[in-house]
Amino acid sequence: MNSKTAKEPRGNPGANPAATQADKLPTLSPHVGGASQRLRVNLSWLIKLRWVACIGQLLVISVVMYAFQVSLPFVPLGLVISLTVLTNVGLVGWSARLSQQAEGSQPTADYLLLTVMVLDLFSLTTLLYLTGGPNNPFCLFFFVNLSLAGVLLPRITAVVFHFLGALSFGFLLFSHHPLLIASGVEVLPPIYVSGQGDLRHFGLFIAFLTCSSVIVYFMTRLTGELRQQELDLRQAQTQQSKSEKYEALGTLAAGAAHELSTPLSTIAVVAKEAEAMGRNASLPEELTEDLSLIRSEVDRCRRILNRMAVGAGQVIGESFEQTTPERLLQDVLVELQKVITEPIGLDLDPTSKTETIQLPPIAVAQALRALVKNAIDAVPSQGPIRLTSRLGAKWTLVIKDRGPGMPDEILQRVSEPFFTTKSPGSGMGLGVFLARNVVERLGGQIRIESQARVGTTVTVTLPRQQNLEGSI
Image 1 (spheres, rainbow, N blue to C red):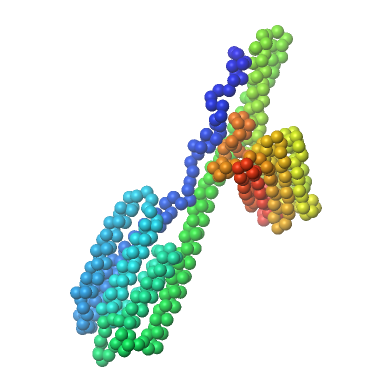
Image 2 (image 1 turned 120 degrees about the horizontal axis):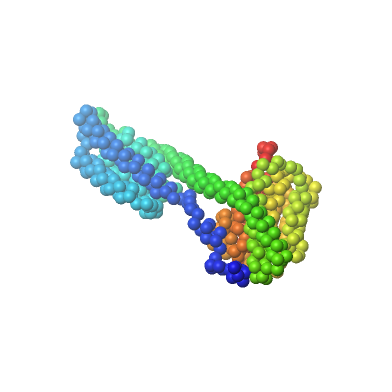
């Protein structure tokens, strides 16, 4: 065995196996299937309602003409209903094609829904125009169309539809075919007959406009809130799924560290004894170097596994304690003295030195140490790093460096497990992930802002007191 050959890097020296492994992890999108599924459901209900409307219109016209002996223009009314039937058949075909697609075009679908509903609005207006206009009790069905618009259409589109509905009702007040029953005198004649509208016309129009405005406003607002809740729920489910996968990775890392520590210790002991025996037996220098290399590589593996074990949750189960931010940060910095050559700037407000916060100190200290360590690694030549602590309703810690910063594509992935930009062997890509996991379990949050060639700012926010006593 040649020690020089063993020391040479193998494979692609610029590749990061951990990052490559992270690239293979599945990702979820909170928007997958959401808009398309909602469109299919809305379209299905709209088609059913239009069939019901066509059947109901035919029944009402038949009953009025034959049971109540009211003269109605059946042929024009039948043509309007036939147009609705034909368009609904086309809508059924379009819905069938949409169900076979992975994801529909939402803007196009919104315009199509608007077109269909405007057609229905004009069909209703035509039917009412031929059957007495506002004197026809079924003019109340305007509110059905407006309610559907508030549910199915975006807010701006629903407002446009509301405007068209108001114009349609105003047109019926101005002109319609009279509906003469019994006395032969129409209750509300069209405006064009007398040349001007009276108080009844204006009152009815204002009442219609007020009621329709209230309906459209509350329906669009309610629908918007429901859609936002649906989006929030989908994002929460996605985040929970990611969190469960990440915790499983952390548990796997801790288990690997535990299981591999014993054989690595055995190898280290045997290598040490063989190295000592080699020196006594005057073995070739090349063999002695190989034994020394084995020991150093084993020590390196043990250090990596120790970081995995500590970072992956060995402190879970730690109880909450009262401590000051100053004392906690001093514990963080003491452990980092071995890797820094210049002091880290520490800016504490007065309350951070005297008032206490409740948290698991070891877990939080390890999380903060990982974030500060990342800042140290990012700053060339041990440049300035500053920690700023502010204690108010919550505790806020700002970690700021003047390093090279991160571009957006790196910043978006910085919290993923096993993703790192460091050279192979220098980092595992678990620091930020595990730190975020600890902080969020405590009800806090981590916000990372970075700009290339400017620096990175990490803001950690934690509640001062925990709602439940116990441990994490």
